[in-house]
Image (tube, rainbow, N blue to C red; front, side):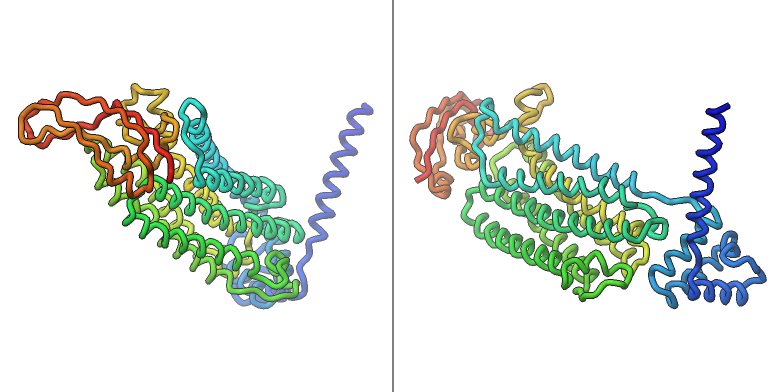
Length: 444
């Protein structure tokens, strides 16, 4: 009996607290006047906000009146009172946003781990600046992902009128921090791609194109990161202006976000399209070209995500429901960053798969073969080009070593061991790549 009495007492306290909380939510004079005016003009209902429960058209008119004539907090309180009175569902996009963010991050981290494995003593690849930049971008990606559950704790993904006002301000602040991490992370990923390309292709012509694009990418990232950080004066006004009670001034965030998204897409197209013509001109078999080009073309998926992110901005504007409306913009941003990091690590995945899963039948390249030798790195993909040519005869043995790439890469040739092989075929121009060679090179 004592236990039963205790349970009843606890339930009574909870019910009383719920009622007290609901009773504390009252319409302001402005919202009450709007409600009375709308219901009297467009319906015969005399029950205040409950008139909005079964008439969506009437509810939209009420919202328009609240937003046009009342303060942000008064309008949000009116929407909350209406939602509770009508027993509207408490919507939540938070789980969906977390699923997108953490699933894509898990894929990216798996591919980053293959990059680390490829740098192990078993492969003896040399660390480069692109690896350092990818590591930095990965740290930013993890920090950006952490913002998701923290902001969800304060109501990110739910309707703003369902939240305490201070929680909305906290969500806005976390969203601001995540935006800075996103801007720096995406710029870093683009720079890592270009540094990797420059290391991979020693061609002077290619570098004349790649270096200016690298400078443009750096300036683009620095400019928009600076503008995002200092978009408001004071900086805190970026997350306190949402309800109109703060003091400060801001740049046009919507215009800046759209400009950043458009220029991002242009840079993506240039960066991911840059290696295609270079790869197509290499002396690779059709199978190798298809495999390598397919790997690089996956990067265009990042461009597609950037387009979807730009499209999601159309629902923002001067929204009064940021914790709900910003969710698509947020998860497309997370996906763009995470997929970009995954793409830059795909070449390492291919090298690791060839080593540990040879039955997959992935074609080898000079990069794969030279990667396991000390002193040889991705630079040797073009430099170590040794071929045998059956020229002017249907069979024979002719060994040819092209050294033009060595000169372009400014390398000193120290020693080369070539294994020739007999070539027989019907075509006098048949070329067979020598697989059994060993090169040791040192920079000048």
